[in-house]
Image (cartoon, helix red, strand yellow):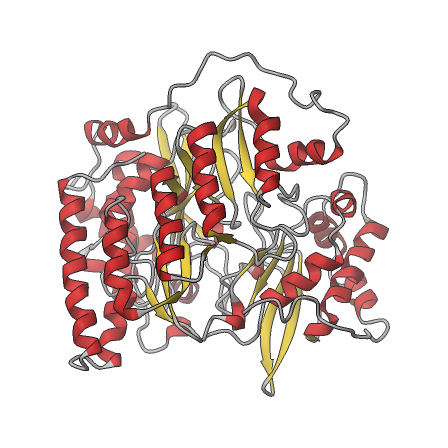
Length: 562
């Protein structure tokens, strides 16, 4: 993985010193809160409902075990003993004291990490495939390009104050596991007829108040021109993006307003002056960066029939089926550690679990691990012969729930329990649904399904692209939930459609139950929920959900979360 050079260390050191002075001035009331807001946001600090929240960057989701242990240290020393992994492959701490934030940033710098540009109107953390470098369907390893984008975007003087936050995702495989279509810029690796590597460039994707799938603005961009072309896109956006209305400030609104043809024309015109300029990537520079991502010291191992071993252990077989993914190298697999155990907020991990995962990474995966945008963790290089031992250890620490890609593997934002922007709580809804459908046998029968929950229209829970999406809404001061179906991320990305009027919190488990009933009743063999929903349309689901009144009981888990 990438290691800081002298410039990285210097800019982080200088930023911390600058920020420490800003915090001291704020505490002394030499800075007003209004003056302080953009300063703290550029260092990852939000004011939430109850306390400050610090969001730390995990570049393209890649972590060393040493960095992971630092998260455990921060959780213990500065927070309440846990951290929350996010849909941008970052980690958040929800109970932070302002006075301590410079010390936290200093601790992070000691392991080559920071919280810069994880918030505010800037280019956020570039995300990528959590299986980058090991995926069996990989065209190229996207991590060197993601690292180049990270270096280019950090402290970029031209884009330090954009109209709105800006998100980039890059995918290097045949299957899109980075959700590129719902990003401001989405990049996917392709080869032209000559076999040369380049990128298909999408722009104008995003969720939130106006969910839109990105449009292709270039079918093939030679890799050498990655930075200059993105710079051209950013310049057009920075010039025309609205600053008078934050709800209409994203690049997706600009593309929708002027059309993809006109937007592309302006980008190409801007690119004329940038193409082949000093920011053109060279083979030497890319090789320098790529050398940080050389394969670890893999052993020459035989390919094992690991599914036959312990075939009588149903729990283990279920885990193999859902949590173990193919690898490029014979004798190895990638393993997903689920942070979606029933009774635990999705994406949360205790300090003890964080330390434990770091230990697993050292012993089973060359000291590295990944964060997924589905809020789980990945050990990317596990020997097949060690799977059973790994499973036993992970199970003992609550990290081996065999539900990856299933109903209880929910994406869920912190919602109204923490977030000051939220209209409604999301964690109790996730808890109630998880408990209602806790049966692994039932979940395996239902098969692949993405249930995503957001506490407000900002869509941090990616509800728009969920097979079932749940959105918290405010109705006369009360918390209600709007339900959509048919959304999808990946190669066949789609925005879900709302089934009808919203529901109370107490009704939500039954609503999900009725949606699943229609699916089980009407599905074709081998058909996923999203495929059935897109084939049938809204009508049969809507009819069944609203056919009879939904009686309510107790909402499971509402009092479990603080």
